[in-house]
View 1 (cartoon, rainbow, N blue to C red):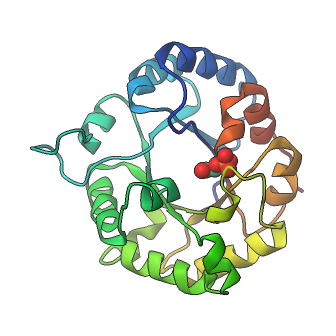
View 2 (tube, helix red, strand yellow):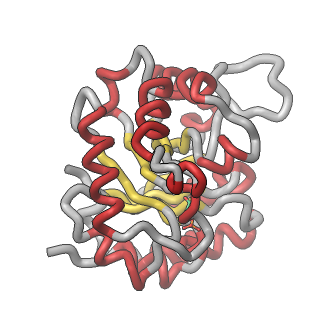
View 3 (cartoon, rainbow, N blue to C red):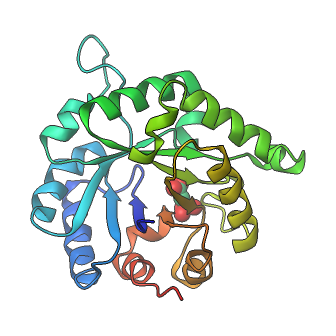
Length: 242
Ligand code: PGA
């Protein structure tokens, strides 16, 4: 299975700062060839970052898109605009969009369908909140997110990437133990109609990346905070797995 290291910059870095970071990352990852490495800058930085990364092995992703291709959707971005500037990946259903912006599984399902149609590779994020974990609802929550998110496109899941990101682990410094994460990954895999790359996300840093990536069930990581530091992101990208 393909190994992926993805860096989600979230709402950080203006174009000038993004240019600097991507240049530093390109130096860091110069030698990494065996993994797919993707960065997800904010929309205003995408074009700048895409231009700098052109002809390199670094791939570019967007943090969101709308499900329609064009029209009266003030403030939204079409997936076609993204592909037109060399963006190849898109995050769909990050927990911050689900929980802060109110995105529903039905909206995410539409976005996934459009992304498939226009040739963008989606990273569909799933994961339980702290309360859901305490109430032992992790599997139920993830099963619903997968079932509703992938409705009608179950057989095309191999063209996407799934990211398991427990909400309680995002930006909190808490991580699932590698074994906990691997067992949820196995559950996700069982629920998919076709084999797909499954990433782990939630407070991944150079110190814990190795033990996470060492799990056979885990095909890579989606990194938030630590991806804003080129040296840390580079270290994660170069982690050796047995
Ligand atoms: P974090 O974010 O690494 O800062 O926890 C991960 C994410 O939100 O994708």
